[in-house]
Amino acid sequence: MSEFQTNSRVIKWIEHRMPVFSFLDHSVGRSFPAPKNLSYLWNFGSLAGLVLVIMIVTGIVLAMQYTAHVDYAFNSVERIMRDVNYGWLIRYIHMNGASFFFIVVYIHIFRGLYYGSYKAPRELLWMIGVVILLLMMATAFMGYVLPWGQMSFWGAKVITNLFSAVPFFGEGIVTWLWGGFTVDNPTLNRFFSLHYLLPFIIVAVVVLHIWALHQFGSNNPLGIDTKGPQDKIPFHPYYTVKDAFGVGVFLIFFAAMVFYAPNYMGDPVNYVQADPLATPAHIVPEWYFLPFYAILRAIPDKLLGVIAMFGSIAVLFILPWLDRSPVKSGRFRPIFRIFFVLLVIDTVVLGFAGANPPEGTWLLVGQIATAWYFLHFLIILPLLGVFERPKPLPTSISEPVLKGGGSMAGATTTPMEKA
Picture (cartoon, rainbow, N blue to C red):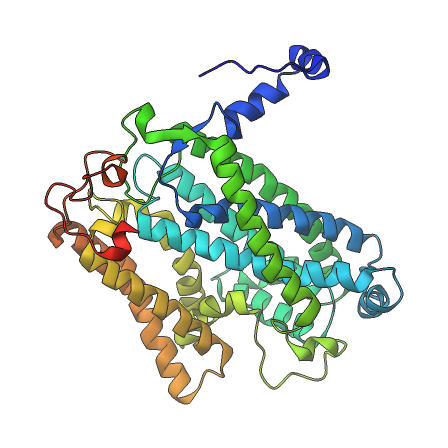
């Protein structure tokens, strides 16, 4: 690892007293080596960090104008939208930022699933990532309650009531969550407090995530370890430029949504003030919770439904030990690739099932999709690790990109693979 060098006297003065620049150089600079074959799918980790910063900054500004009280919360949000200078813009950025945060993180997760980023020696890195996902879900749920619209109120009532299914302690847990005997002002106050706090906890866990990432470096599309300097390039400027381009493309889509379709991913019912005496015809959470909501409703028994919903996340923690295949990347696992596509389709189907009333065809579809979800992780992946015969791996990262190195010792590649 090369020493950090600079000609700036100011930077040298700071560096001598607090080596922050050498730390950054070793973390994301010229001294940090990365596999030379990372694709644009690896941009989504840095994009997730960018959106997290956007959410924290806009959230702090919104908190300055928000009133966490059941009598004033809805009106304070309307005041932000109508009277606060650029309040509408800040709120739309924050509101749509939550959806884009989940889009980026879900792509990041499915990329990890396809390329085997959860396999040794990166098991802890993967598990910390799942913890970040759980913290994101808790933060998003509590944030959705804050506008105190109809869907906010009834969504909070339905979701918190799920804990009543816990034997012996369920009712006590629900009362503690509510701060009383129904969703009311104490509930809104504690949800506001936790919604403000959790993003900073997410930042702390992200630091651990990056720390674990630097221990063994990034996985890569081939899923094989780097053999030496010939397989690596400095993170800066090669991947910082690539990330900058990805940020530009991301911001185009994000700005298009904020300025032209800001309410597209929201529920119009939430623009009606919360009324405990008027239940909405169909209570639905935000779109990024719909697959888990479908799993919850697919099982008639309340307790088993709650267990299945949380189990759909818990199974990700043990994924490194469920998939025993010695090959990481789905690029060399033809059968795994088929089942991965089926998993993606199954997740989308669960989302549609969660968005529709749990009756008739949609209930049956949700039940079948739920069964397939758990079948994929608990049965199919372990069996594939035993019976699947992967394609031969290249001897190094450099081999496929060198002249005449595309044959990969007998492996056949498609034009898409070569690209």
